[in-house]
Image (cartoon, rainbow, N blue to C red):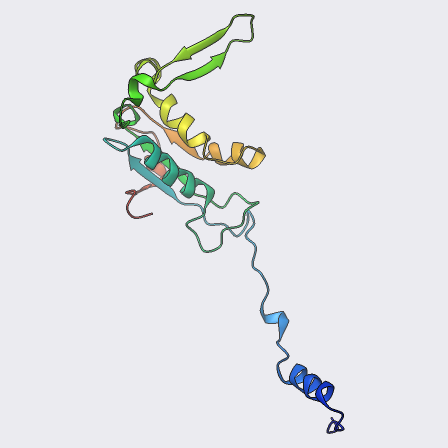
Length: 171
C-alpha cells in the first residue's frame, strides 16, 4: 500500500477507515434451531404460589427466554411439569370476583365461572389459562403450550424424564 497523498480531511478519513476495519465474519449471529436446542424437564410445586407470578415465570421458561441462545421464532424452551395446581393462591378477592367468560356457540350461550368454581370443577384450568394467556398467540404459542403438563395432585407420570425441581426464585 502506498502512503496516501496529502489532500486534507478526506485522506485522514480514509486512513481511519482502513485502520478501524472490523472483521465482520467473526461477528455472526447465532440462531438456534430444533437440532441445536437442548430441552430439559423441570417440575414446579404450585402449593401456595400466587397464580400470576407462577404463570409469568413458567411462560418465560416455556419460551426459552432464560437461555443465552434464545431465538424468537424457535421453540427453544424447556418442558415444565406443574404439580399441586389445585393449591394455587389468588390474591385479594379474585377467587370470587374474577370471571372467566366462554360461549357455547348457541344463541344466549354465554357462560360465566369464577376461579373458585373452576378449581372445584377442573383444578388445572386456572393455571393453564393463566399461562396460555402469557404465550404468543400464534402457531409457536400452541407448540410451546404442548410443553406444559399440569396436574392437580402431587404425582405426575413423567419420572422417566428425570425432571429437575425448579423454584420461582431461581429463574
